[in-house]
Image (cartoon, rainbow, N blue to C red):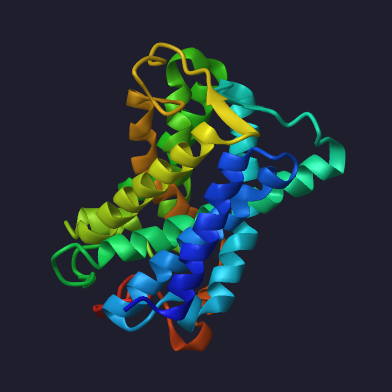
Length: 291
């Protein structure tokens, strides 16, 4: 039986899809917040049913903070896109100046919450225990420095040679921020990968790919929308996205995780006694209760 906020999610998704099909602008321009609020609520309800806890039900403050971080996070990607020019928006003519910023920021606020709720939902489907950090097997001292150096190199390469290095923007923030999180004693995907604990990294990669299916699917029929101009791989489109471009969603999920943990203090993950990153503290051999 679907939980009440899951039913609300289904209703909001339906409303968003109706707006897409109506194409009655400017009303239909606002399908995005309706559809994505519904997506988040529906998957959160699924996680709540499977695990007994979820972000919406048990840590709404965290989810709200994620939405705020998400706005700045995607504006950063808009800045990176000024170097690589991989996507453009069409049909945004009615919006300009502060109106455009407000409209875009509203849509951008759903990126990180959607990835987290989808990833936590996917995690419930994967076998294996929650991460158990082994203090005797931390990252070698050279690896965080090497990772941050690689992240800087990715940014420089994308800026100087965008026609060949454009894909590096979907990896650079993870390489830069995750080792900083590790050094600060915060949750780190690098540490999990080093200790061969694959479940959470895989959940965030697949959860983000799931989001990508809906991002691209709803976008294909909508207006305004985005289209891609990706060199060398701009063929065999699935919706507007070239087939090979879908691979970018996998590391993007790790970037979302790293950015969220980097920006939000630990206290932001403690609302209502629920922390989706509990048990990750570096140097402590503790286990994370499944969210």
